[in-house]
Image (cartoon, rainbow, N blue to C red; front, side, top):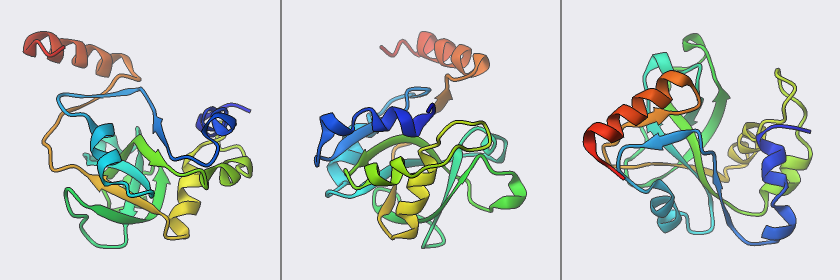
Length: 170
């Protein structure tokens, strides 16, 4: 079993019934600490950090749809649906997940039931979608203005290095 669901399941015995942070390290941000921010607002809920992306980024990230038309910045917003790397025709939403999350232990039974996706990997997105369908998944759209770098590809990695070098951010 490979994929993000497997990675998260490895923490099950250690986490027990506690809440925990899920952190996918292939994105960097220009300035703020998103984990600290979502921990502050999570209130023992499953909360994903989201950002407003562009259409060109759809095939890189999962996309979140909310129960309200436009999510409020700086607030928890109920997620109604998650689409994994959709095409522009599959969704109007541009609110993308970058997998910084506070999760409750209720995710573990969902992870154990996941079937392999198109790539043969077990995606955590399936468990997030089930939480959303149960009304137990929220998105947090920061009111900070930050630049996102997808360092999972060569161009994003080079852009991040250049940005942080020019701006001398350590």
